[in-house]
Length: 62
Figure 1 (cartoon, helix red, strand yellow):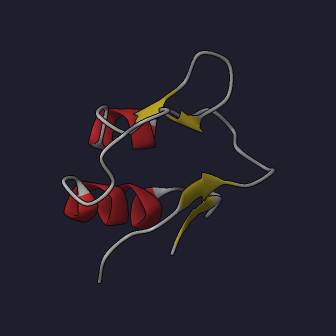
Figure 2 (tube, rainbow, N blue to C red):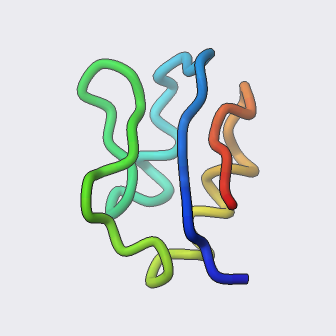
């Protein structure tokens, strides 16, 4: 599956799991967000791992 979009919907608790799992794509300056220009396909496995590990399930991958 090629990832075309990654977003973080409302409800992020800024736990840091996404940033720890895939710092190439996620950052948490205040609440989690996807880095602009991140290469989604290069880090597909780590993005999926972060989404699955999110305790509030707010990382959406399509």
